[in-house]
Amino acid sequence: MDELQLNPLYEKVITDLLEKQYSVVENFFPVEEVLELRQSLLSKYDDDQFKKSAIGNWSNEQVMKAVRGDFIFWLDESKCNSAETKFFARLNHFIDYLNRTCFMGITEQEFHYALYPEGTFYKRHLDTFQNDSRRKLSVVCYLNEEDWLPEYGGELAVYIPENGRERTENIYPVQGRMVIFESSVLEHEVKPVKQERLSITGWLKTRGEAIF
Ligand SMILES: O=C(O)CCC(=O)C(=O)O
Ligand SMILES: [Fe+2]
Image (cartoon, rainbow, N blue to C red):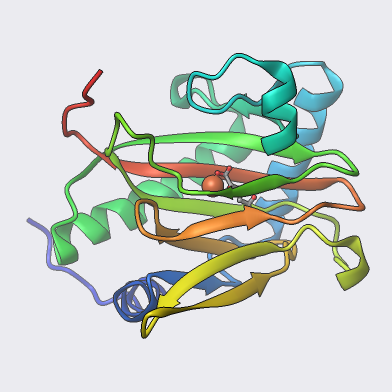
């Protein structure tokens, strides 16, 4: 095994996760890579490659619309363009570090682009499905235009259990900002957006069995 070099950025994420179950970092990806991903998302969206999101295995469209309104495109690591290749390279480096330092046992990941049109939202939820606990960490990186003003809404509200009560942290989807949290612990929601909201979102997973 190569000698492990301490990585201050990764260490900050790990400390945050241990102390408060979530972490917000601004400089995980260089700006030019964030912009390249943004362009890649937009060109796929313009090509009509995005699909209406679903929730678990619910198929009732009315119900789904009342819960989440984003459009998504699932990434396939074997068919990546240059922006996506760089994204996965950085992510895999981080996963390797997590596995070596924290023995997280991450063996898989799944990512999609997401676009929330004006007026859409994603109601309060947990990212683990009842029959599948393999999702360990949720990762979101925002691909919005440079200035995300508070009046655009679309904040990620994270509900943190604290001393038997609950604290809400509102995180704005600022360009390049990355949020990582424990998938099975933190409930969260995307508040209604008043401006198109772009992101790349995914999950770091353990092998574990899904129970169907
Ligand atoms: O975009 C975000 O801030 C969070 C999205 C989310 O909660 C999800 O896709 O499960
Ligand atoms: Fe979520």
